[in-house]
Length: 165
Image (cartoon, rainbow, N blue to C red; front, side, top):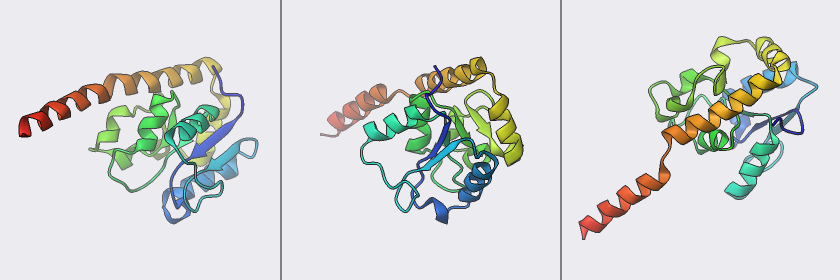
């Protein structure tokens, strides 16, 4: 179901020092009727401690904004957003050839900033039918569950470690 409020949230530490911050500010300027939150060290709304609290805030948000222009290409925020069934506003190009790319498909699990201006992003979000938004939430969650198998990985690592002795 739709989140209770029109909220877009970022969880990038020291976001104002990252080039993706310009994307964030541009979209925020286009969407005065939406609430924008920025969590993390040196961010407007401060840090959130604990993955449960991060997940709760993600579930309160309609979209997770994650334009980063750097990083290792995994991103616990990207994966956590999908696990919470929240579509992500990002630049797919930042993940080209990296692990996080496996989760991304424009208009299915993410909105690709590379393909849209801030105004176009706002228009897409503002005119998105609720059924399509719910579909994107479902697709984000399903993409996560089809690609990520932490329990299996843990068992493989455990077996590996047992064989070292």
